[in-house]
Length: 269
Image (tube, rainbow, N blue to C red):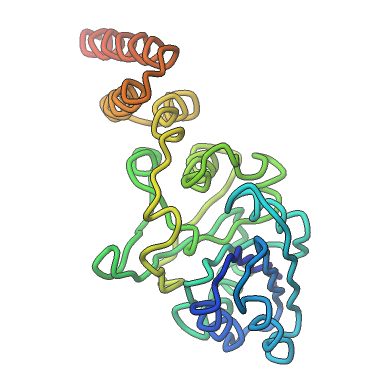
């Protein structure tokens, strides 16, 4: 059976962390570790973690300055020992006590590099997710609370790009879905209760918005329909104009022209 590393980045999470840790302690599957990566909390976060030492056998915490949530996640990745990595928000919780058990058996029966399901959240008025295609992933993201990633994927693709303040996980998800060397599988299972109001849900990511069109084209030119690439490129051009990013404005104008010409050529032939 696979081993899991559950990574929880925290900062002043005293009011929510207990619920997350309770959902982990209640798991029927025991072969996991929990890595708390704290960004120098000034409330009772660290004290709350200490109360779970007896409930969670493999629990560790590191509290140090970081450059943002994804930098914190990357720091914890360097300490992870599990075969599969799972990132949980400090205000999230596993949907049921059998989540890790069900994921473990799914992997045992048919090993994959990435396995993901759905989340439940008021943000989405209920259940969100479903299977993601190359076309779908550049339009909407998979919640990281729904994904289990083999450590080998990070070795292949690298860690989260912390230059993206709120959507580095989206960039990473685009990368593994569009990489034909990475096997992924969707399962019809609710993985977690995703709390609305997390960092990525309330903070925009202008840098990612500007670069998403280029990322989609570079990684998915042969897999994503031309019409979708055009839409994404146009959206990124708009974001570039809002930032007065001259270099990317010119790049997207060229890319959009190229895609329009390609569309006409394909139509002719």
